[in-house]
Image (cartoon, rainbow, N blue to C red):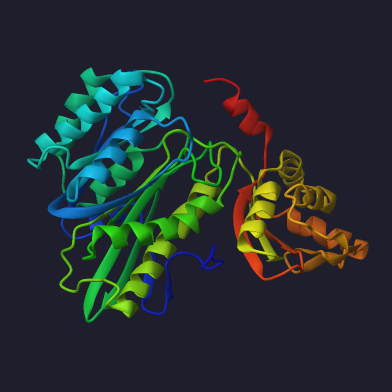
Length: 419
């Protein structure tokens, strides 16, 4: 499974995938909403806090940042997942990451979980917690606590509430991102609703990125965690915008188990269908994150094949996708294949230049290491597009990997030169 060239609102066998920013409100027995509590202290009404509440108790799974520096909500959510076996939802604020805030930050993150649980009349610590935004500042709890209380009183399953939740988690994003997957199992319709944020600090192993996934599936926690980890590895861990890894990256999956048909290793086809649905949902959201990268103008699919292993292919893809020289040439619509090859070379996977084939879309740039200069005009036409694919075959084995990347623009530098 990899990033699809098909538009969303497509069907693959039994699976229907829809572009839907209100998706979180369309999974049975989940209530959601988003409110403004002025986390940024700007005196405006920007939505900046959301809650998701399941009427039924949920199994939960999570994948988090691999950064050594981890924000307080990441630490608290990790602890909650390790200790608890049932959950009822999560609460998330934007505008403040609650990262590098010491013991006070941990107390504040735990207080958010406790207050959300209390307001939802759910067991204590049955709400996970996330934050995103500026690092190194304490949360304005005098505004967040009333915000949680307000949001809890507005929870419902209306589409506009789903849209408000998707809006409330955004930071430098230009638009909300959502996806709804539907498929059938033994005559019963199952769903996964997802929404995400992310536009900067986007690097494989996730990013300043949050993704929330809700499903009606009936599945045990251990298997749910396994399926989520696989889906994340092949989607959110295959994207890059700027090569930076955040302190707050989180993907959460809640399964409220209302389906009448349990999924387990004893139901292999049902499990495979669920894997596909979750994988496709994550891929769709990951692609939307990249396409909304801070001030980008191009989305580039880097396909590496013929490596000695998948791990080697991933190393090459990451080196190309994160190279500032490569990304700058994409911005300039310059098909500078030399930069691609040099980036592939410093991945140090034993690349042999005389074996390398390189294509811009289907137009050869190198065949067996020999430049196909007659195609220069065609290369230029490809790299001038807003979306294109670069395919690199090392001809060393059967390993492969796809990375989704972007160009690097003056706009990105201008936007990030100061907070």
